[in-house]
Image: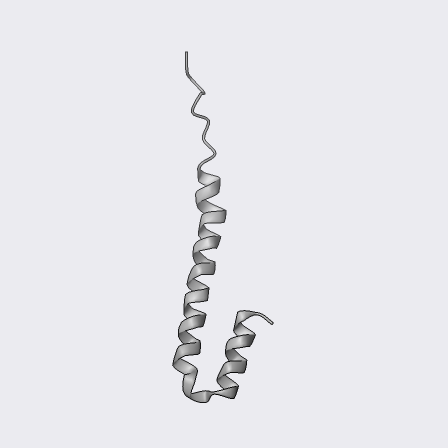
Length: 55
């Protein structure tokens, strides 16, 4: 069961905790977004050959 399913199940069991479940999902999405950015943009942009033109 993934985090989204766990939050949905928690909401169905305790509808009063919707705000809490929503905040957990927001935090999880933020973390996933940051991991995606680091993996796909920062890591790829650091492939620079610093020794090219060194005499």
